[in-house]
Amino acid sequence: MKKPLSLASVLACFALVSAQAGAETSEEIRKLPVFEYAGQKLDVHEVLSIEEKDPGERGEDGRDGDDYQSPCAVVPTKMIYRDSEGKLHAVIFRRKSIDCMTNN
Image 1: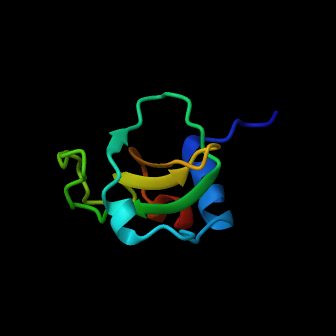
Image 2: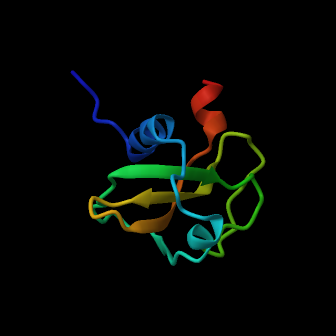
Image 3: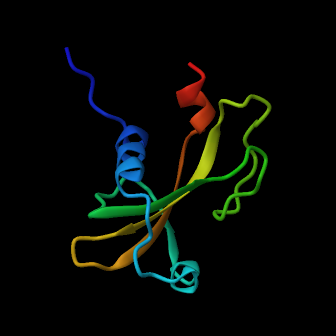
């Protein structure tokens, strides 16, 4: 029986495939409004970056109440992506840290 892929797995694959930010300036990306992922369907054509917050660092969503004592924790993560129409978006979501995926 095949297991369905998690959002984190799919996003990690997209990040590996498209690691460059193209012609966008860092200023354009910095000014993007950030929305919080809440289960909605995303039109992700190309992932430009995925940035995981360091354990204990306050996320852009303002939350920092999680227990980050373990290197394997749920952390705020920001993804910059381009949709199928070429528009840039920034989304913040929570996922297991990269340490969970590489140290198991």
